[in-house]
Length: 404
Length: 129
Image 1 (cartoon, rainbow over the protein chains, first blue to last red):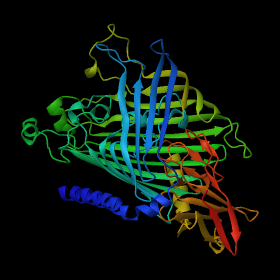
Image 2 (image 1 turned 90 degrees about the horizontal axis):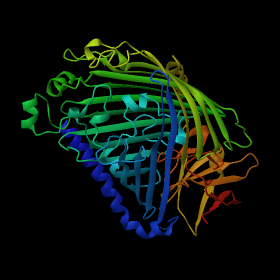
Image 3 (image 1 turned 45 degrees about the vertical axis):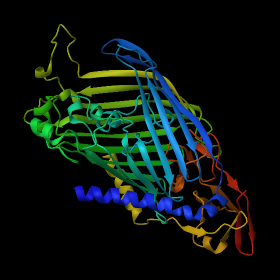
Image 4 (image 1 turned 60 degrees about the vertical axis):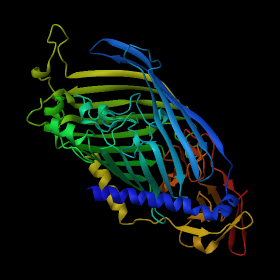
């Protein structure tokens, strides 16, 4: 496996080497340069009201406020970044709120079809991870499959090669990044808290991701995968915890496939994903965090733009949609794990998205949630200290979003 | 079930898998020259001018004229990817443009740059101005 990683690194270095080798034709490049250096400022954000019918609670939150800053030094080299504030405010000593860098990387264009990125990058896994602006998806909340099974806006430090093949409607990506931290896994949150997101990541363990996208007619299809180690400790410490260390020690594997269709005012998308953690038993023995062996998720969404007109496409949009999300965050648990059927969930989401212009969206939706029964072995505060668990719930969301 | 049906439809379409014709050419005097004969089989051609970091989408219209679009996203200057019948997409932030270069999905707010074209002696001349 080390040989494969070595080969990948050498390949990326070779590509970057060829990038700089092209400096010999710099004169001709400058001659055909389309623009001088430019700086781009952009951003996105969303706020929404949510009513939880079981709890009888309501909340309003400016969930995300994100600023882009990008600078194109030349047609060949750019810098791109996103800085995010979640929940508006971060106060010392209090929970909630987050300030984080979502992306920050240098982009090297190799030619019109291929580019190399290096820094804090978002790998192409699923649909929402790469394109997560609120104006590009239906529903106030991001779909739960691409939140709890595929972590949302999953970014790590690394290098990646993105591009498409000449003569074929086929895109690809491949990236080498830091891995996850299995000690950070939290029961019921999937891989989410095992991410480093650029903050003091361990680099003894690494991960590779790759994807293929195919366009044909009104269809777009994608396959993507991730494989990475989750133990970044020294071998001595890992051995003491009974964990396999090394580049791909105690691995997480994720596979994903999705398909999208759009014609006129109609659109449809479907996605399926599965996560495998074969050494979950060892992780549980070391960290007692009830890590599952297998998680899966899938959803299908149908949408129609009632204002679609072939004469004025996308002038205004009023999209009605329905989505069926199914996922299980502990589909299979090791012998030393505790099954939790509340993590086996089905969500039906329906609502509308109104875009008076392409960059502003008003959303309303209702989410009907059904889960399995609570496992008494996992109840810390039994009734009447807490309300009895209800397997059915619904959330009503009304919100706004923008991007520019 | 829906996923399976959709997957089946795509697999069916693979049998008629279309290629994406590409023509590489040099830039001379801020102009690109493309033979009209390339459009005998298809009404679309991807043009790759030497030394440029963006493709040009060249489409033959029903009236015999040609539309040349610079495939550079008007949001953050990223390269665009042809997306079948649905125009062009930017993988950076998700902007989309139709085959005529109009924005269909933000965050981009401006249509694609369109280059003027003319036909001289069976050559389509794209003026890069």
